[in-house]
Length: 589
Image 1: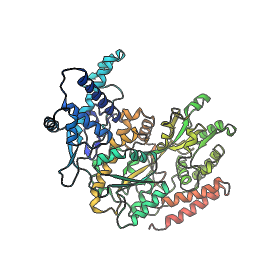
Image 2: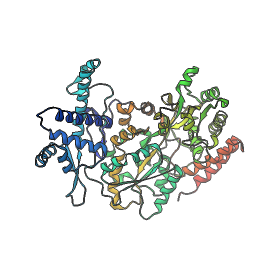
Image 3: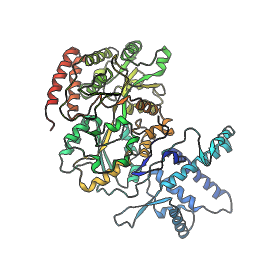
Image 4: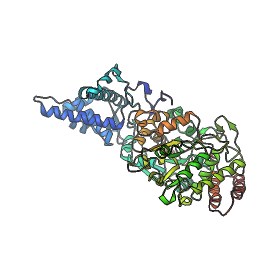
């Protein structure tokens, strides 16, 4: 992992590089310190006589409290919180503003009414103050912590675990979107975090937020229906990474280069595979909102107790699944996506990749195959010896799976794993909150994460999934600029760190995965970063060709018949190959 995270982009404005942020206090720590100083001020003011209020501190604490709780703060409320007469308070407020600690944001078109927000300078200075307060408190009341002062140097602490990404702050100018910001998303834990933090994000962007969430298939259908409207019903839409080519060719989304300077996004801070997957023919069409590779989850405690090594190959997966499979005791070897249609289609493509077989002819490059240039007619490669090995592997998995495996899809495969009924499960990192955040789950704290175990001619691979936020091509022109600002805001390091702190287990940016506050929450972030640096994160297993959804559905239908025993693996692959050849030969409409 890079020890020097890329420069943070904070709501469209370049923030100081991480090395210049003395501490970049996290949201939870910011709240603790604000509460502590507020309580201390009350005690001092009420316990000692005579005493004089500190209007500067009182107003700053009130402003920070409003920022944390997502409340609008006005000049009048600042004056009321100051503890001094109104006229004096307004003079003191002017002094705080003159020091660059407060930003004004218009609340109306006339600009006569405005709200107040902490500036970047205030958040950064408060980060440094919070670090010093923590050090003083530890050394004053905890003798065991006295040695920590040796690591304190010129006002900066080098204590491990110090955060580097400051909390998000409000836009300097609120979004001017009639009816508010409208977003179409997938109904997964990360996007649901956005809904949970709705009030806070509304304060940040200065407008109401309306979010609609759908399952994966319904999300695609709604996005395509929306493209047929004269004007888009949404300002931003979440696009599954394999859909990028289809949505570009069908005119559903617009190039980012038309609406912004993409350097504002700091592209180098995104995981390479996740950022490349948002491109079509070298042009970016979206910003990674989630980079969630599919991994192998396994019970570390079970494997350790039995003296088994974590499975690195398909043969080891089968051996471990056989070892742990005990249906009479309600325990099974492995869970995976085997439901008919989209779910199984994704599984088969990723399994082919683990055996070293892309689903279409792709040129080999270092680390896998080149899926950056997919224009023109494609040739399917779904009936090959390696694809047959992949299909036969799925047939073997079937023997050591839960009894309802043929109806098991995205969430269903993780639930029995979380409940302690399954030894291993293929799952996206975005599903990890189901057991990482629930201490009652047997899998809580006992889960290891691996790239896909590979076949004889494959290599370790972590197929990249997730969603990009995109701007619809038919969005009304007067809304485009503000939609771009919202896009930058919601994908900034500060926002993505906030998602993680509230339950998400996806981090598209290196800087977020490197943040010590984030790393303490889950081993996933460091694991995924390491996979990225080892070039194991790849998006070619599901190449974003325009016809990919139809090919996925085809694979998921024919392979389901195979799993049910209606056709042999060879016959199923012959059908898949013939159907894919027809799909890829038809023009995209």
